[in-house]
Image (cartoon, rainbow, N blue to C red; front, side, top):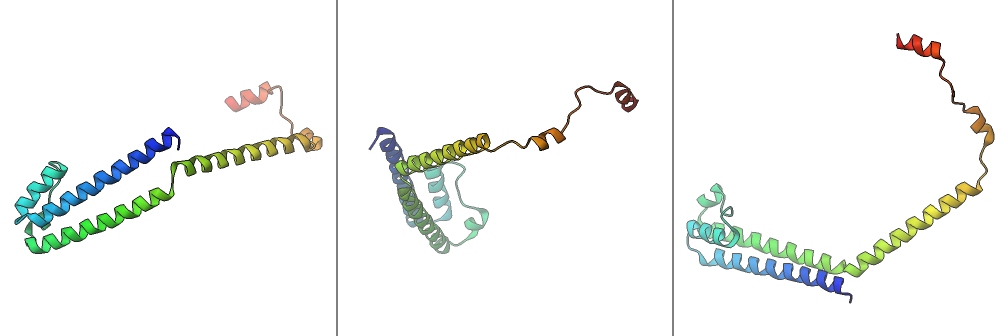
Length: 146
């Protein structure tokens, strides 16, 4: 495998590992905290100061909120797995092959079009019917200007 592909694959793997770790830490924070205030502090610690619970979540009883958040974490894990599966089906070498195929097709179409336009006879009668004035009628131009 060429170095570029290894680098791309390694980067994708690293992102997947980091996402999995963040999701695991989130699940631990939800399961281990006793109050919404503790949970909010844990979320800010994990994801930054802008993270936290919404006002409606702060009013929700902790057992119910815990179930909701764990369900959302499970949905996020499922979405992440789908994303991983989709990325694994699109390997970098397949992208290069597909791009090459499209480029070759475009070149073939352009060559064929150029060949056909040079081989096909030009309709001289049509070309002679289209006339463009080479000199502007000065009087007509002055009438239009007024």
